[in-house]
View 1 (cartoon, rainbow, N blue to C red):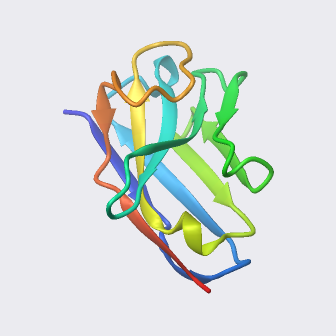
View 2 (cartoon, rainbow, N blue to C red):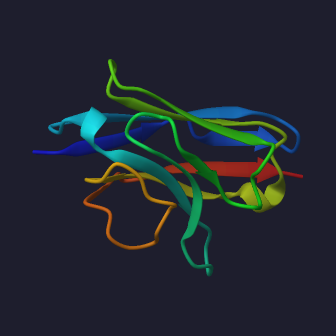
Amino acid sequence: QVHLVESGGGLVQAGGSLRLSCTASGLRFHTYSMGWFRQAPGKEREGVSCISWSGGSIYYGDSVKGRFTISRDNAKNTLYLQMNSLKPEDTAMYYCAALRAPWARCPLRGYNYWGQGTQVTVSS
């Protein structure tokens, strides 16, 4: 059984940083491209950042470019999202997702597995 477990969310002041982690089990992690998505109340889900199975291809949404960094450690079956210079508009539930494909630019549909999410709240 596949599990994706996110951690690292919390409450932070504007300008602060958080590091999200997503630990995968039950799948061959290195054969999946991975992504971080977020959804705020009343808003549609948004692709934040995605990374290919090798880590060689990366996508960032316009709203997070220059502030967020995605990475993965295939030896640890873990995906990361370093979030710096956080803004109140970054407040959302953050989800990681796994896609059985070498690479995808954060499509909103088609991912094979999703985590339960971790809440990020940025206060002004």
